[in-house]
Image (cartoon, rainbow, N blue to C red):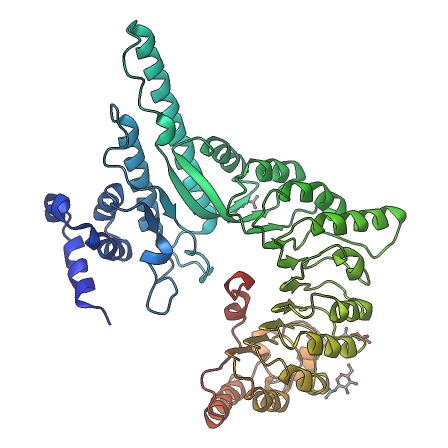
Length: 507
Ligand SMILES: *[C@@H]1O[C@H](CO)[C@@H](O)[C@H](O)[C@H]1NC(C)=O
Ligand SMILES: *[C@@H]1O[C@H](CO)[C@@H](O)[C@H](O)[C@H]1NC(C)=O
Ligand SMILES: *[C@@H]1O[C@H](CO)[C@@H](O)[C@H](O)[C@H]1NC(C)=O
């Protein structure tokens, strides 16, 4: 329910003309509430005025747009997000054009846009993707920096015109800036604009401070260049995908990451690492990788998804000194030796998140996986084993170890050939896990109208094979079972998106 203040704020921001007349007499305590109302109501004119006159040093999306549940209200709308950026640009242009004493009336120092894309990557038609927000900010940086340089040249010319050396020097334009704390997402299309922006932003009026960087399909050269330009302060995640770098390319890249002393999460999925065929070159490359990755002292999360690591996990991770808290090894062609290594490694006691999706855990890997589960049982919060070919027998072999993971919150099981009976048994056993909040389960094999068709198609079953009625009855039955076990606080769902969006950094 909306508070009285929020209702009033909605009313106030809906009339731009009268707000404008009173803006100077509005107490600063009201700005946050008005901002929220204008942002969510897409009152762009009001929003821009509020940002331009922002009376505090920090403007933070996380603080201003957070709902009662601690999550951001909605996917921030494109219109409102762009308006905030325009507002900050107007504020800076204004400060730059003041004759002197740029300090007067200037308060805003930090625009914190992080958090806006954490919870809801699914984009609505009116929301702004991380990619396009990155481009918009980059263009703003470049534009403002040009304006600032133009200003500096003018000032220099004016000074040369005057012989009087007693004339005060122009207000130092260097001191006119706002830092923008953001997550950035770049691919080859937007690389050059972001590269230029990061370069000029170091000393420009709009200074980019990247928290989480995601880059897709960038060449080695461009990635190195970008990492070298980025300010190391506060960068906590680097996510590089589809870059085809291989182990050699990653080894060339890793030294540029050492300067990021807050780097906690490194994601390198689809990097085309293949160490299955051993030559002396691959041995050398693995040793080098282990040494380099060991130099990232704050690293807590590593993702090597979709690489072919068969049997070499020990060599690749052996150099890491500080134990990891999250390890994502989906579709990595793991062998028993890899899981045995992990369960005996120093990481086992600290792992909060483990993703082994897409590895065939059904036969040879089942015993080492049981051992791994036992080893991580005191720390594990989040387990993903989607598409692991687990059937009812495999699952019942795992249940004892699973039930000892007393802190487990999230369990991802989709795309495994489990039956409704297997899932019922799991639900009953899991009801004991006090912390459990979410289980993503597969469509039970006996809910397919034609199991033979599905088996023949092997992968995820086409929707048309699912007996919708059977499935609906089964989901309803699960709800009854949860109610009977007094565990309606656990969400059992088949919607994979819910689970995929749970990030280690927000655990
Ligand atoms: C980069 O990402 C944008 C937004 O998702 C997309 O429109 C564009 O096609 C991508 N570029 C490449 C080369 O894939
Ligand atoms: C899973 O791996 C086992 C060996 O561990 C193999 O026999 C089996 O065929 C594999 N299952 C599938 C469905 O690929
Ligand atoms: C599960 O798979 C294993 C081998 O992959 C097989 O031996 C066992 O019979 C299967 N169990 C069920 C219930 O289908």
